[in-house]
Image (cartoon, rainbow, N blue to C red):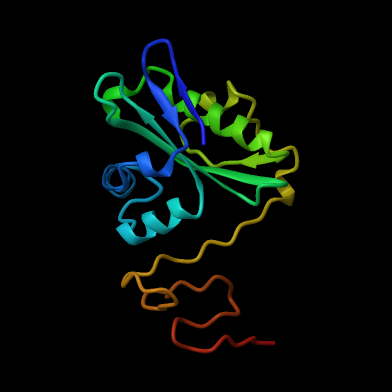
Length: 176
């Protein structure tokens, strides 16, 4: 685990026991654009399966930012859920958090870190992130959100992914 203190007193730590999970969940599930409505249990599992980083305010040590890295610890990492409380934005905390997380996984030998952002390209570009050199090679599969929150539920799988798929509840059929 690491702990670093900036000259202005903000502290970053990778100690998962310091995280205020209630606060992190509130930020992500109510204020972020990418995790709106995320159930608390999902936040807890996501943090438990990641390298989390918290940023803490000078003085009282209250958490003011969060981010996490999902990694195999050898070749690949995904930076995600980076969030800075609105009262502490504009101080470089998000970039500092991303840079610290980047350096932590580089120390493991990881050579590729990816992320997705709608509005913070400049923040990440300042620490070396660039658009992928081969975007035509990237692919993704996004499972539709489940309204009842249960693992494996198909309650709202109603949008076919391809023209060869039937609606939820029906077996996959291929028409020739």
